[in-house]
Structures are given as structure tokens and as C-alpha cells.
Image 1 (cartoon, rainbow, N blue to C red):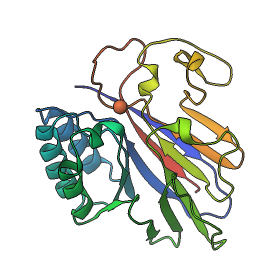
Image 2: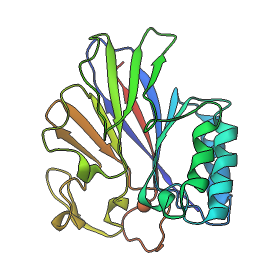
Image 3: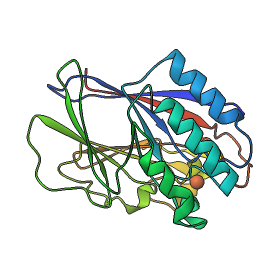
Length: 229
Ligand SMILES: [Fe+2]
């Protein structure tokens, strides 16, 4: 199970820098190999925060493996997450334990505030509840499973939006000058690696796993984002 590391830099005036590792659509079944490799990557190059945008597991055994992965990485980095449609498929008893793992913050229950040693103030939210006005010193970062739920004008108080779900379309035959990936972009309006939506910068992960593991010209990926700095 291999993945590429994609680097994105999001400039933000006057903001202390923040390093985010975006992991999405792990779709874990019964094997821990992907999780072990991700753990190794995060140890080698530790981010300030790990963001997971859902579809973490496909079956109950996968939910247990993901819980153990989160217990391990939650001891080293703050973890923020939202769930995807696959995580909810088996019912609450499988995803609920993830919400009480130390160091892991389920944003659909509560936003998470992070103050970095360099003096940055950040608030992570679930984009289905993007929140109201914000203290101007705080930078708000929103997570959604599907980028399709994010309006084309973005959210005025959200600087950075992170999402997954679309798996890059799994087959990429061409990319247009705006960065939209085809043929999937015929069906989805936000199928691109990054996209400007008003004052919100959207970054979409192509994911780390698939229920139907067929891809062409669409690598699985960890997205490493540097915001500000
Ligand atoms: Fe997915």
C-alpha cells in the first residue's frame, strides 16, 4: 500500500505557520499495513496537527484498527476529525469510541482550539457548522467529508477548508487549467486538488484507500499543508 506525499503551501498574512497532515478516506478493512506506514510517516516528519476527513473504515474490524491507530498518534499530535458516510454505515457503536480517544477531537461534537508555541491561534470546526464571527487573531480551519457540501463562495470566516470523499475521481485522464480533474469533474464541481472559494482556500485529498481499489493516474496521498509562515 503506497502513497505519495503532496505538499501544499497556503499563504496567510500575519499568521504564525501551522503544519497539517491531511489523511482522508483510509477505508480500512482488516489489515493494518496502511496504518503502520502512516504512523511511520508521521513519526519521521511530525506535523503540528493531523486532520482526518472521514471514511476511516469500511468494516467493524477496520474500526478497531483505526481506534488503535488514533490511540497511538493521539499521544504524539493533536488529531481532529469528521466522519464519512462509510464510518456511519455500521452504526454509532463503531464510530463512537473514536470520539473519546485522548488527543483526538471529533469536530462534529465540539470545535477544537489550538495555540502553537510560535503564537498562532487556530480553531478547527466541522464545516456543517462553520461557526459565527471570529476573534481576528484566530484562523479558522474547517473540515468536511465531501467538498461538494461547501458553497462555491466558501465561508467568509474560514481560511482553509479540508475535504476528501471524491478520491480524485480514481481515474484522471486530464486536468484543466483550473486544476479540475476529469472525467470526474463532469459530475462534481469541487473535484480538484485545491481550489479558491471566495476567501476560503479548499484543499481536497485524493484519499488513501478505496472500497473499489481501481485507480489510474490518481495516486493515493497524504497531503502536507503549511498554512502561513
Ligand atoms: Fe471514501
